Length: 82
Length: 109
Image 1 (cartoon, chains in turn red, blue):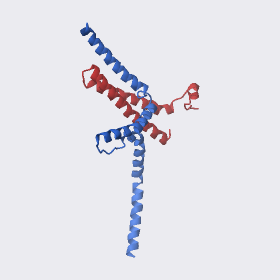
Image 2: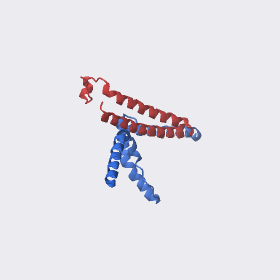
Image 3: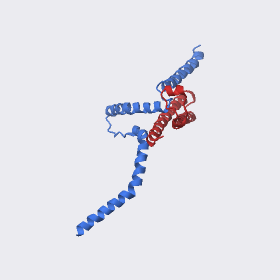
Image 4: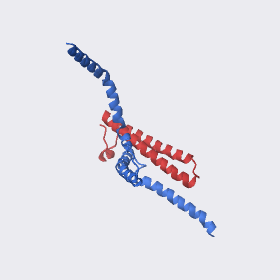
């Protein structure tokens, strides 16, 4: 993986982390207000889940360069290792 | 009769609102892959500042808008620029020092 590609992937990871943290925070606030009598733990839970999803996406994104892909995935446009 | 139905109506409305919020976030791609997340952030970068400026004008406030939404997208470029500047700093310092000494020598002559 070139340094430029790595930089783009890391920037994308960071952007995705910000988006998912905000989404988790928003959903946590909604659920906390509607179902859990304005307690803090649903907000923390949903924010943490959002961060975890972003981490998993980032991990998959950084590993995808080194994974072998099948011919079907190659037809979809993903790079194939020879 | 109404006292029995009212808690049910409250529960149904809460579930509808929560379900709608989850559906909207899923449909807009906020819970998808990292590419979708960065696309959503780009859309927010375009859409949010004009809307905020309209609200600021409506309330008659003067606020400077920082370009915070650009920060995650160019973070690694900033890190790379900083490290390359730090690695070039000794070479440039010696160049400027030699240029300064040469200038002082020329002045003395």
